[in-house]
Image 1 (spheres, rainbow, N blue to C red):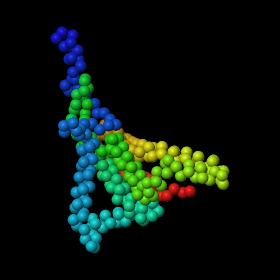
Image 2 (image 1 turned 30 degrees about the horizontal axis):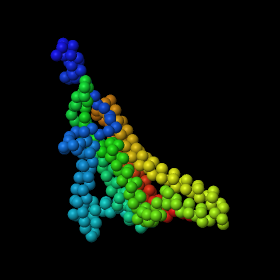
Image 3 (image 1 turned 90 degrees about the horizontal axis):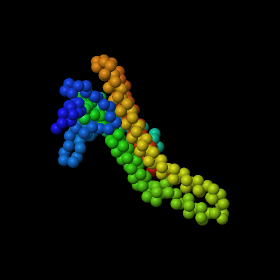
Image 4 (image 1 turned 120 degrees about the horizontal axis):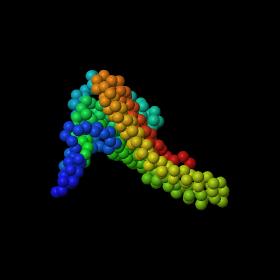
Length: 285
């Protein structure tokens, strides 16, 4: 090995005790591997969220009484309010009873994930990894909804479920015709002699249905990016405040982020409910 090579390696190696970089990345960082399966810090928080919800509901379920009291009372009041709110979106108790279990589960999963991301230690306890000449801090835990992969996955789930509900409620053919309007094309051929206006109206219907198809992809992007953007922005805001003053200054912003967590979970759930309700409605002629 030449002297020049040795000198270059010495320059490239990170200096012990050098500056550690705290990066706000838009992707979750890997913290462990099980074979070829990568475990990220946001995936761990999602598992913790599921565990919290499962244990919580088991504990509440074991103490159910005919005459509710204590925590059961609170749950029943919240459920009643959720039913009333869902009725306002769907306009039908029958639709509400079908859709609410899915949207309420999404709401609770997102809400708990958002709030767990604010706990002390999340994003602040981790390890230092060396990448080339840089020493980068990687947190062991990170809010699940601050990872675009998770928000994209639940947005896809919500949109796919809205289509499944549409097929269940209006039938496969009726739901399919909302996007590829074959009925409008058939009517155009049948009625062209008696109603010449169908040559103008029905092509517009066919074009509008194709726009609806494009809109389905926009729903996934809108749902996932809105949730991810708000939670990620909150993380960056809190990190900035903590870098200015670790004590007291972040407290009002943490309270603000708790409200943002509720609002974003509610917006996601209500939009999913609206998508399901629209998909389950017969097309107007």
